[in-house]
Length: 566
Image 1 (cartoon, rainbow, N blue to C red):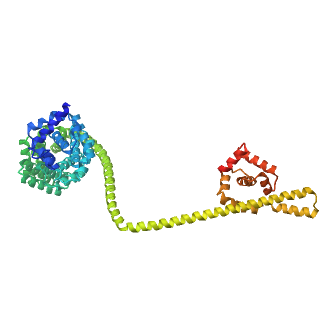
Image 2: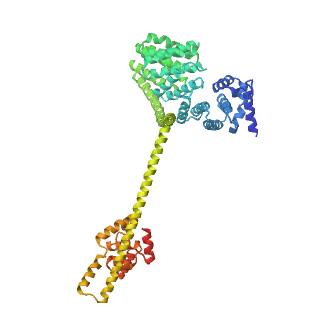
């Protein structure tokens, strides 16, 4: 409860400080960009800055119910020093606020939060690879907005490009710096725009594109002069001097580098002083002034000693390389060897650091490829969905009537065909059943005739001629191969594919056994089957017994069930 009231007091203080003119306070009525500028304007007031520290350390995410309150808390986090806010509280806030922003569609806030999380991960946590992922996500979010809608867009692009610049990935840094510079000097912080122009020119200089570098340095100088920024004027002039040096124009380079050297010494900017002095010494060396070069290099080494080793290592390596060259030309090979060894040691350190950067860069490229593919797929789906919806609506508007009519005609024709087919099948089935019944009746009648023949035989009243006639008649009622073919045709029409299924289920049955089973399917008696097949009823029973053995059927009832299952 205490935490809730502390945070509530903090939010009320932030809103009350705006001199509210309408219900809900002016923050709720401001655009995102207006709130951003307002927070920046009050950030420098110490009393307001410290009021929120205690509340931030005990921040309850449940109170972040709308975009304005989340934005307010974010601004307080950004403008408060890390030592006043616990790092775990900041990380928890960023993650919770990002989740809410994504869930509620607060796109401006999501971009802002992701940028701050990237900065926090890069600077405080020190996880460069994870920070680059956050920067990339923020970049995708910022793409939907202009610098007027999100004033921090220029600052973000500058930070994101700077991350790649630190990795010596100058191609990606160039692309991002160019994007930042293309926004123009519309941001509130003019120094960031000048810095972006200056670093973009440094990328061109590093890649050996001196004409482009000189053009961009001159643009940065014009921006600095427009804003009367004496520091940036001198810095950019010094960088222009380095380009003239690379273009072998010492007369143009020296005064500019000397001015940068003087500024570095005055402002205790020893990194810039060491770099400017190094370029001046190298020009003396190129001119053959060994003494002047040696003095200049020793001065540069002294200035470099005042900087952090990791920042000055490349400059220091060049100083040692140049000193080795000076001593070789002076025939002092012992000193030349010592400085060459020192340069190699520093170079190993640089390469080791560069190797780690390359590893991080490789990981980041893999991650970015994944993110890009996912984003591209999502964009494609969204684009296709939107275009498809529009095209679909137009198509439906134009073709709905025709489509419905065709569907109705097609449906009617299909129903007519289905009905005709049903009637045809039903007719064929009736016909086949009738023919099969007639065929069976005919066989039964012939079977009765056989019985009468047998009775005549037993009466012993026949002459030899009459006996021969009776034998021929008896043979004429047997189920011949031709009749069997006719019988199976009718049988299969009524009991579709019965014989095929029977062969699949019991492939070892003989043709005679198949005939017994087929006649059994018609539920004919053993006596009738015997007459039709020209065998005795006992032979029929014996055949049925053998069939049951083959099919592993014990009882006659099981045989009947088998027939029903086929």
